[in-house]
Image 1: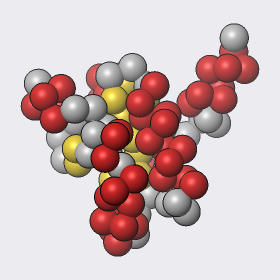
Image 2 (image 1 turned 60 degrees about the horizontal axis):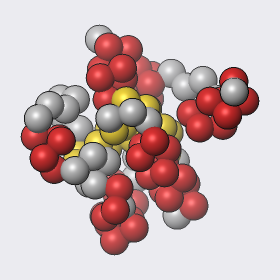
Image 3 (image 1 turned 135 degrees about the vertical axis):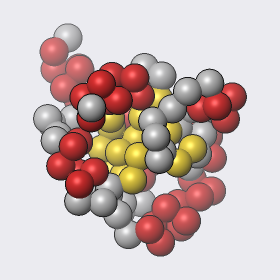
Image 4 (image 1 turned 180 degrees about the vertical axis):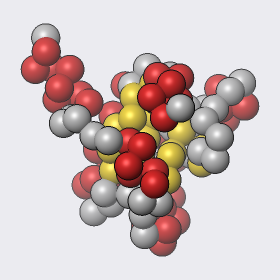
Length: 102
């Protein structure tokens, strides 16, 4: 089980440091979920639209921290971005990430 969790979330990452270095937080929930609460400054691109907006994300030239409600969609989104050559990290659930960052 621990191996599965490590695989899903990847190696330990210092998200605070990534943000200080200019990383982008990408919330991959639906716009309705995002509008119900999100991390300050986070971009919202639902996971089912990531592929169509890869070039837009690439032009920012910054690492991306993905987040969602539970960590499942953000894991998928981070994988899509990584396959496209973007430095991306799964931040997991946005509320947990928010607590870690503050």
